[in-house]
Structures are given as structure tokens and as C-alpha cells.
Amino acid sequence: MSSLSDFCVAAYVSAAMGSAIASPASVSRILFPMGRDGVVPPPLFGVLREP
Image (cartoon, rainbow, N blue to C red):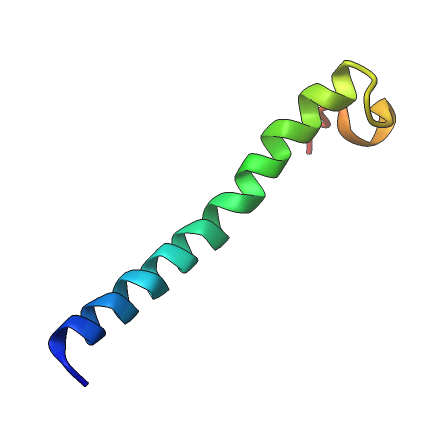
């Protein structure tokens, strides 16, 4: 493989890993306000619980 090909593969893998890490965080930030506003069931997504 050429060095350009190696660089492209490394960039692709790091971007995929970054996206996989950021996705769960963004979903929770979207579902909470939707539950608070009544778009999705509020008892599931619109309430904060203390441990």
C-alpha cells in the first residue's frame, strides 16, 4: 500500500470512531428536551433521576 492509502484508511477509521463516540451523547441531548416538551413520552425521556 502507498502512504497516501494508509493515511486515508487511518483518517477513515479515526472519523468512524469519533462518530461512534459522539452519537450516544447527541441522542441523549435530543431526547431529553423532546420528552420535556411532550413530543416523546415524558416519563421515559423527560425526567432526571438521582442515583
